[in-house]
Image 1: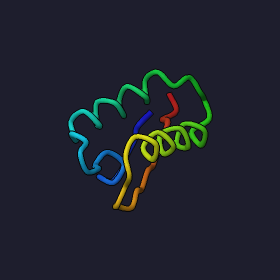
Image 2 (image 1 turned 135 degrees about the horizontal axis):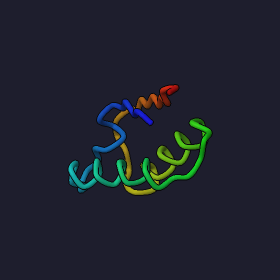
Image 3 (image 1 turned 120 degrees about the vertical axis):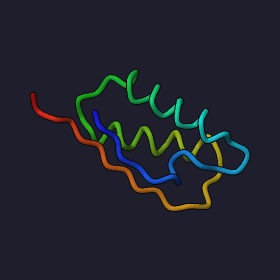
Length: 66
């Protein structure tokens, strides 16, 4: 899965951006779903629960066909 996102997904007050990016990459690899909408919802829910966000979030998930 290719994930394109704005900094609002990983940037929040009091959260190290490198740690947040690593956590996002981990969630992308361990979430077992073929449905990209479910995966996107999971990533957005996790971001909202981890810290308050003051920035907008844009997220695009793509699964290339082999």
